[in-house]
Image (cartoon, rainbow, N blue to C red; front, top):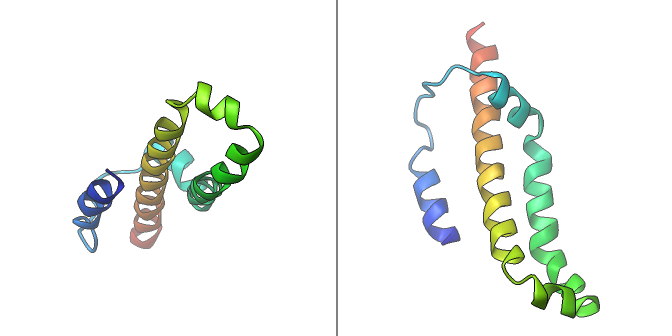
Length: 92
């Protein structure tokens, strides 16, 4: 699933940006580097959390894929918002 999302996003590399930044894109652009950091911290940190709190993770098994995919999508959107905002500054 992550590979499919990465492949779809990869098709937009070096493509012209068509959206005008709105308030949502500006908020995501400001969160850009931290969304990917949180994604990787959770991705690798869940093993340590699972070691100490295994029962919690087993009871909430749906939390892991939803959180990983959700953080991945938010990271991609934040990166796109960052590019849109950077493009707006370059044109101004």
